[in-house]
Length: 217
Ligand SMILES: *Cc1c(COP(=O)(O)O)cnc(C)c1O
Image (cartoon, rainbow, N blue to C red; front, side, top):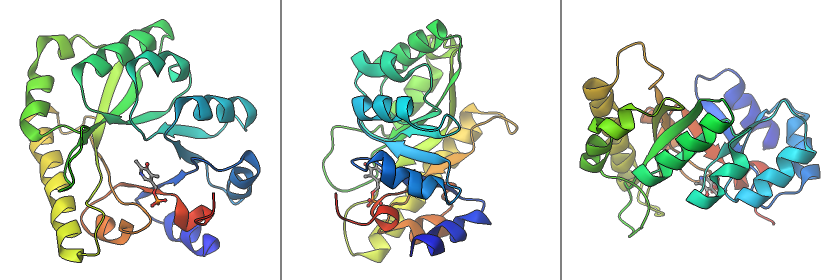
């Protein structure tokens, strides 16, 4: 299964983020040794510890909800922050990135699922954000795309619709705010249960955990 999944993405345009939250360094090294270099974590402390103890050529993505007061712990090394959904968070990322003399890649997170959630923007909120003078001054943030999670359901068509909607949001924002040659080209969608649908609907980045590591914690 593992070989198969890694091979599937070896020759694909879709990037595989191996979601290694709760997994031990030994478990991660096993996947690393098969060639995987992008790993995703959703807890700051866990990410920092793993970053410190693991090979330095790993690209670490932060995929969870990021609290403002914790940005400083990951700003020196994080490769991509998937779940950015507020001006305040952007402001803090910009500030910490500036301290590190870096530009940090970020994805705007959208709420596309039917489940209630405090997290994620809608299209109008994203427009307001991207239009604002404050945002335009952020020299240490590079918005490279969008991220979203579909409803946890077996309804194939519903998941498909939600991913289509995220793709629509992506295209709309790209047309309105980004030049054709900009870095704004990523759609992070798809997890173990729905990544095939996500790829059909234009995902450029899937975040897969249990299918790679197994369900056991
Ligand atoms: C845990 C997690 C994943 C991976 O989920 P699996 O179902 O184990 O593949 C993907 N994205 C986010 C944001 C997660 O928290």
